[in-house]
Image 1 (cartoon, rainbow, N blue to C red):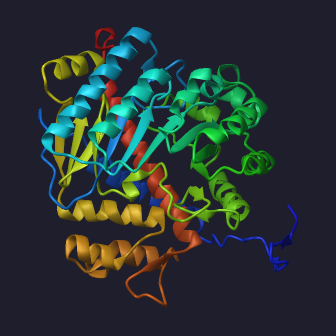
Image 2: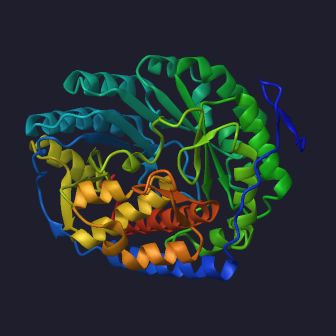
Length: 445
């Protein structure tokens, strides 16, 4: 990359140089602190329930739908998924549409819909039918986001989603064939060049294409990171997301040792990502980059305090309460057939815990706001979360906005720590999923 960039206005602009100065010992300490809070707050002391609450007037909601099927299972993935069987999958989509109707009957309306998996596009015709159903039930849905793996882009049936999906996120992980082989993705999804060509051909189908990359793999050198970023930039997608590899307590030790890079490599790789993408893209969160600063992205919890999940293994957060749907496909079908939603458990959070959660999301998104805490919780952020604010300022992660005292500036140190905290939070959620899946037997499929 040239040390000088010539802009359209012929001005000479120096490339971005990230200023991450937080030492490794401090990062390790923050990681341990986050693990403590995640283990404490995501402990499965939930109580049983069989119903969702009704919506609260004046609140805005997002609809999440989970598709728990994949043609192949990646060794490093701990999301809720099963090997694809067409008969089971078609039955599941029918039940999913019925559960959406139940949410409608409760009085819910939604502004946005996110479809995750698994592989959401295992049956494009069923997915298209489900999106159409959701839009008919909830005409307030303004955008639909969806995920897919690179292989499905080549299916002729994929074109059925044109006009239905506004944002398609493609799980590339890496364009490097060595990394793809190490993660068992080369034979499953094709080479990096094949993936590149498929994404290029699919760009015309959707207003927003997002390219998902992962850093933190063992053997992923600076040159590989640079090449991945260059390949992604050549595609010129509306969004690029650069996830850190998330290794959970439930992941096999052999996989951890084979896949994960040493902990100290993460800072240097993240610095490289910031330097390469800042300027070409606007940073939407610690690991998401977009062409504009008002685009929806994978972490829908940033834009929506409350969301309702449908489908096996989905989560909802409503009225400061976490609701968990059954992870058993058999129980899911039974509950829907009986006219009941799939929710089985709930956990109520206290005000301090909810504020800490929103603080985490504010750090991660770079949108930490005193006004938000005052309007939402009727508290002074600096005193209500004194320890959290003091520690972040001491580490150079936050500083006051000199223009707007209600806002805080998340520095490059803060972005690094926000990424680390969100990584630990998602790893904790993955542990919850793994624990809920552990009792499942063959009959639950």
